[in-house]
Image (tube, rainbow, N blue to C red; front, side, top):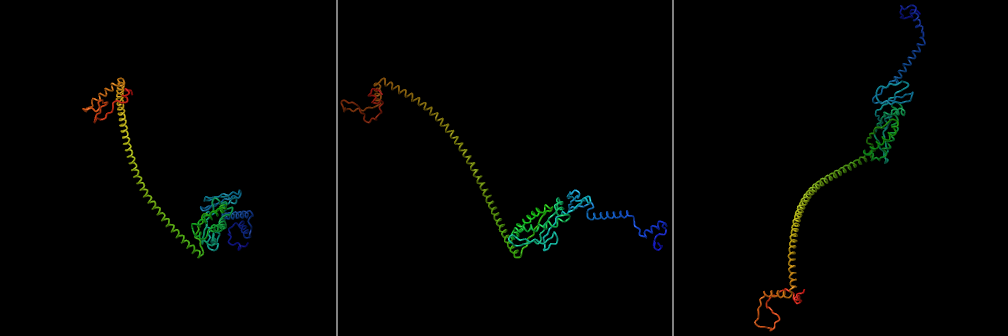
Length: 398
């Protein structure tokens, strides 16, 4: 090698080794094989590490608050659902962590063209009466079921694969079926067509739940119709509103009538209670008067009974006295009768004589009958014979 070829090589190198090194460099000598193998291995490891870091398989995974992860063990086939956020460590190559978005997603049917899996053309429905209507924009809200993330990974694949086909495959047909059950007039009534999205969400969940997806809500805007039909529906709505107004007035009138009836019934009830109070007072007064009258009657009865008993006792005593008196008189008469019976005609004559003593006789100085058999007394009062003539003629025998 000439001095000009050496360039800027220092001249103070050791003459032996420096020249040899310069000769190797200048002559293009190759490094040892072991050094080359180590460099290749290092380069492969470096590229592998960079690839693992870039692909997220470096053994460390980050799970955010709005995410859920599934750790898959390729050696055992086990799957672990991770629902708590944070840094998750795993064994590269033997294990892998798949992260899913668990936020609420929107599947929108709007416009005339499909722009993505979650944005398709508007929903057009044939009503039960054969007419057509549509929704300018209808959105189905859905989300991944966090506890079923492993099922979503198995059925849909990693990442956002669960957002691509499941909702799109079923939402349109089920919503058409549920809204198609109603006529156009019924669909125009919010109180009626609100049942359709509820039933559609129920059917969608029955299909999607086994794949780890669920529908949370389906807010439905007002449907759209052809202009003529819109006018007819608007007229119908106005008529329904008028009917509702009249029904409200009817309810108001009925309510007022009820209030008036309640007021009248209340007044009548008060009057009835007052009358009942008066009648109760009169009844109590009558009962008290009856008690007083009964007491007076009882007292009068007691008095009269006592007087009657006293009069009875007195009359009994008088009767006993009269009985004794007349018994004595009867005994005297009996004795007289016995005496008369013993003395016979003499006693009778004595009685006649005794009677005749009280009689004044007027004698006429002439005799009508030289041999009178009886005497007559002019103007004398007839007297009751003391003794029966028949018994006298029988000699006093009775």
